[in-house]
Length: 144
Image (cartoon, rainbow, N blue to C red; front, side, top):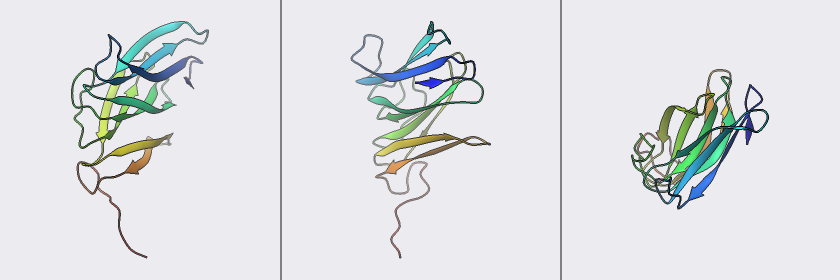
């Protein structure tokens, strides 16, 4: 649950085996006003497993979601996975509509662990079991 600039809320969780879902697990987002009245609902997911792991409010009243994705394009997902599991970042506007989305990861399994708002954008962090591949430009290096 995150509070928005208009004092409303975004509530996010995961939904499994829903008739409205797209894969084995999807992200379910509900937008509420300041009195708790439902304004919108959205299910995000591709053909595989998609789990919301983090969500932060944005300055424009929207939300930024960090989703662990093992899905290719399909359902509501418009970006291709780069490996086994990727960070799927989805920006929602103040009405709960998707503004943009982006996948990050290498050939292996990559898990998002944190999202932060900065003065110029967003900071995304996590863990990776991928070498330099996909759109991952850093890797594990040996040294002292």
